[in-house]
Image 1 (spheres, helix red, strand yellow):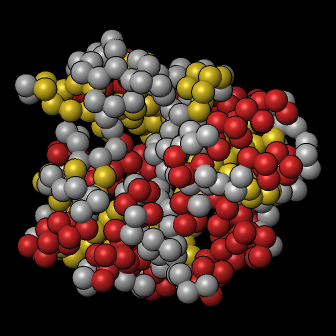
Image 2: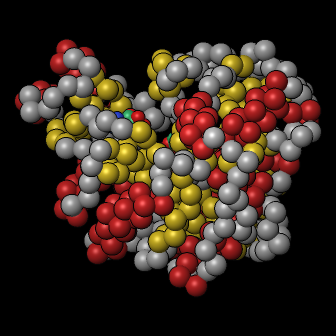
Length: 431
Ligand code: AMP
Ligand code: GLY
């Protein structure tokens, strides 16, 4: 069948790479795509906010499956428009994507379904927020209700910091996304990204990963979209995964179905492993970026089969996904200035050399300028490799990264370090 993949980041390059390997994929189209995605797909210059244009393209190209990568078109209802025109879509409806699009919506759902999460208050005005703040300890977490490209969360160490964050948000820092805020209890523990595929009824676990959200080594500096990741997250044991499905993901999927907004697609649970067990900090209605890159490197099953089964409500009869027991690790190379204003137009060379020993370099913010590859965004490349354990995957990824010649880009040097330390401790204990 012909497939249309929507999006243009590193996540979408990883999806394109994997979709194109499927014997079920005839022509893969991607819109808008990037130069890395162009190695596997025919690019189409579609405006994703123009639902009529996307639908018309699908009709002309006889698209059998549409895969929506990023959250914005999901929250904007693109899946609804395409389904209404009769197309099979991987990705939730506008109503179901509220799980990512409105933090308040998700918190209320958790409260109703008794899903373990941080205590919270919603507030629609500065006065109400200031009043609610008094019932929280410190640190306290302040979140813009709507989509804010990962920047709408402040962990305030003092009351004054919390007050300042609230004042900025209600002054319109994130436009309508911060017209309402959620104030949350700070949860202590390790953070894990857990993925599951669902067609609204059946739930199939789809791997775990750990992201590195801060820009600097040792988890310092401002939050980013993610500077690197590895999979699997071994701290997230099979027991914890079972608990997360039973207490968090399954009740959510059930509650969405009961509310008449069945959730179909990948559900990405951001969890904190607290002393009382896994607790939900957020849902995303899409794959993580860069978590998708490491999941795709480990996935041994046919991705088209799985996503198509999801889109067609046939997940119960699909073969469950198989992942390599290997670890995969990705290191993001970002442009100077990220996560603030990144410099663009930085030259990039050496990708073929980086891939010579089996690593895979996924493109995110890249572009071609007079035939030469340059940077065009904050996160530019994801250098991704596999190994028998995280240490081996880490070594392979950094060796490959060393062959990339891009002086305008920087990366963290400690992706996976915490897990490597645990591996070292485990092997010492086994001696
Ligand atoms: P979010 O956009 O909701 O994922 O928040 C961004 C980051 O802030 C998360 O990845 C966590 O590291 C952190 N965070 C969010 N909510 C909490 C919370 N309630 N307790 C502790 N950390 C949090
Ligand atoms: N890597 C975090 C995210 O995709 O939201």
